[in-house]
Structure formats: structure tokens, C-alpha cells
Image (cartoon, rainbow, N blue to C red; front, side):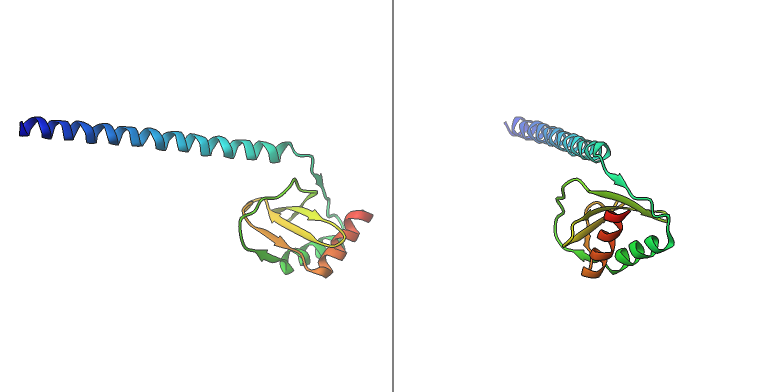
Length: 129
């Protein structure tokens, strides 16, 4: 009787262990699928690429990036208005006359808000350029 009980416990633990791995595999597949969808959405979004050819424009955008303030919390943003590059780094830009936000394309989980002066300068370049 004791042997049957031990055998049943061993079979039960084996089945429980196998079913747990199935759940983890399906969760991993769901996470991977979600990541692919987000990547495809960003890639198919129509974003205006800004060419920062002038030295003055590059300086304004560099200053805006350097003076920006990191925002805490989870990021859930709409499609960006613009994309620009400074050297090897690429950024996404959301800009209005009142506010501006940037996000590095290498770290899409963190946003940075632009200072009031940077918003005015960047908005002026974007609307005049």
C-alpha cells in the first residue's frame, strides 16, 4: 500500500512539473508575438525624418536632447511625429507649440521631456524647415 502511494505521488509530481513547462512556453510565445506586433507597428508608421544638415540645427537638437528630463513610469505613446539622428543615435520626436517629448530608438521604454526653450527652438525648426 505504501509503495502504491509513493508511486502515485511521484506520477502526480511528474505530471505537475510537465504541465508547468507548457504554461511557460505559451507565455513566452505570447510575449514574443506581442513584441513582433509592436515592432511592425513602429516600422509601418509614417514618420517624417528630419535632416539636420545645418550646424545650427544640429546644435539646437543636441542641446534639446542633453537638456531633456527623463520621465518616470511606464511609457505608452502615440505614433511619433518625427524621427531624427545625431551621430549614431536616433530619436523619435513628439512636438507641439507647447510641449515636446523625445525617445531614443534604442530604449523605447523611457521618454524625455524637452525644456520650454528647447520646445520653442525645435518647434521653430520643424515648422520652418
